[in-house]
Length: 83
Length: 495
Image 1 (tube, rainbow over the protein chains, first blue to last red):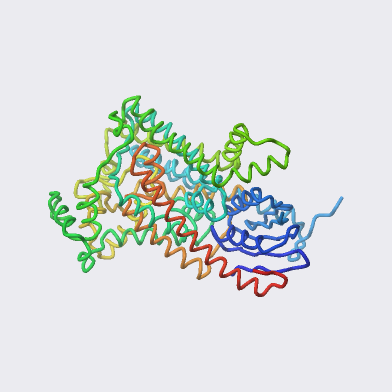
Image 2 (image 1 turned 30 degrees about the horizontal axis):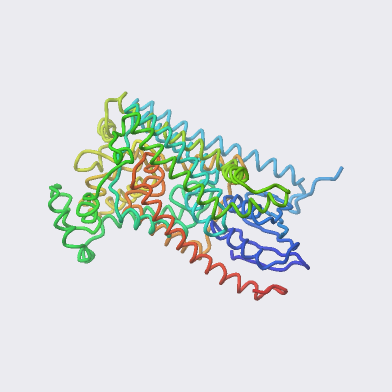
């Protein structure tokens, strides 16, 4: 298990931080978004429930839009559009 | 109508798999709750006095459910503010503290409080700072590591293990380390008249406690204002208004001004609304209401923590006891009591001490003479974990969190990588040391004490904030370092 950040298509990225506990998922998400352009999409995979609350608040504050949220057996898959 | 997706492995509709999983989780949630219920009824069947034990157990269960539901974490409160500018959890903690302060004031004014202020001084700040760095490195505070263990998270379990073992070993630290103890502490410690069995002139923590901490002043805000804690004015004006509400409001305003205001006013501007005092009031309220589940959890925890104090005191009156040791003695389980014949029995929510006792008992059974120190031998004891009444509060907290996680399909077995295991053990160790230096953790030394108007609570909190800031600075550097490597592998991304 290791953090994985990759480009999946033009304007689309994936950040996999499954297995990480706080504060790693929120720190990696913030860092990943800061490296993307406005309008780019980030598919975020994490399984630390409490990080979700912080990431949602962070997106709300920065104006980034969470366009899709899925939960599957304790794994969260969110798609975030950078403002 | 679109057909449901099929899982590749079994050819079963994905929705059916999800329903099965949900049903299985619900069954496990009922099983865990049933196990605690059976344990409670069984214990009360053996002896009526064990109602005292079940009270600790079920309050622990409630705390666990609330902590998991609200993702309630004292580490997150300070860490997320510094790391990603999110004040959500800090607001939740403030709500819980004010609510607990209100209920605690009722309990204190009615003469039913078991709370005693702790000595305050620079040690409270230093201890808080050590604890604060530890909780950021570990990924959670003492209480959140318990609830996350209930979510199936083995990293958090390692944190609990590390806190427990470190405390149990640290309180008996001596030998060559005694040379580090100032002579004034040694002289003061041996002059306290403690029994020979405790050897107060030996051991770093013993001499720190008896030679330094016990010489520091103890006070609540009521006492600083010349009021008694039990008076209505003392409880509600001194301890609640001056000691809790005003500092809490000041904290909210500072957080709003430095972390929330800019973003909120920008959002309002986009909506064509004007700035001004009304906008700032709306902004403050928006910050408070930004996470409903955290606020709800804070509210229930605050009320439950106050009620807990009331119930424990009520049971002491009912059974005519003032310490759980009397129950252990009456039921024939008096191994590990202190030389005073007492045992750790806070009468309210506490987290780390009982965990230190579990390993203190284990080490003792393995042949380590650890009852000659103040922590185990004079203050808390090392009862058998099966009869550690307060210990069941931590176990049931894990159970309550597991039930809530199962019901919301968030339970998942998670095992740490070497990196996370290292942070967990290191952070847990720092929290263990900080907890013993500060006479409690984020719950006992901060939450409970601030809510009861104890000056030392805010001093521990101040140190915890500084420690969390330091921990976040370190992790930001660590994260950027790892991201830089990843970005180097991804195309089109520039640092």
